[in-house]
Length: 502
Image (cartoon, rainbow, N blue to C red; front, side, top):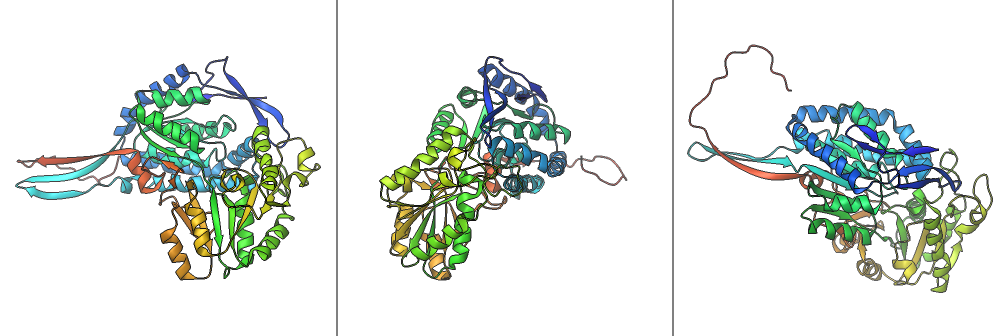
């Protein structure tokens, strides 16, 4: 069995031997190894290493930082299959989906490679007699990232490439459910030339989270996870004087107008609803079907769902894998009966799905639940409003654009949404009126490219700053304005050599 450790000051660290947790293979339900759970002392050791490494990394030239980022990007690309295999083995998602996760994370690394441009400030010459003013941005110091199980590579890459490129030292606390990807990324950072201590990994649970939130040397914390925990991270971190960006939960709606291409809608709803077994904060979990297209759309969705291949993540034929843990699978499955109790019609029951190499999902070893479709889900019911975070697609019937918009805007969350229509005026009205942070127009999962920022509204975000993009650069830096006067010119001597950067 494998043993997953911490990565502190450029080396593996055992940590407290009394604190470990079991790792599982979601496809079989069997224990596959153990992961260390950090004590407060382990977190302190990682932070101390980061504090020691920060001054030299802060003072490294932008050219040097960019060179390390470029090397890291190439190493990550070369090891992408290995990284995807680790993700599949611990999370359960299929290999192609894991590769897509790595690819989207690498987009942020590529964005961070442009750090010399991203940190350019402004300059005003002669604001007074022989006086100039200019703005600069400088790193915060030691910053931390607390990341979820559903994207063990991509979500950390939303954070640490920009934080490190800006000159900070970064401590990562990944999910204890699928921690191995973090150690591979740590080793690749070292191989790329990142100084020891600039990137550390502490595996763990609430003990390590709380210590990071309370530690006086941690200047900022980034978090992605459920809304209750996001609120806790934000309130605890800010109470200890930290800058915090905490991204919470979601319940993403797809509004389908009668003029939409229903084949495109059905393809998009199935892809966005059941990819990664629905364990995505940007999954489409509710389709708002505007009369009179509901029956036809549901029929098209069901036809596609019935042909999905559900099986182990390492099987190239699999399109959807298991859920991450048994308790999570059971929680998601409970909504099938709840939905029926609330008045919905169970059109496709994921418990009856046949798993490749096994029997029905409900009778096969492993954490299986197939794609599920609930039709006529009452708006405002728990099945409609709760963040189920699994392969359950709810169809809510509405009579008009206005009713559908109201359903979305009345919701607790405001992470992502989509509208499907061929009416440009309706689409433009929707993007203006909907109270959601990320919007797709005939695009089911509107995750922004890395040079834009990712984040929602309402209870999907705590704090004022979204991740990556320009907002990410600003989150991990502080601004200074310098006013200078130089009365005498200086002379540095003759040097005929070609000027180089260093």
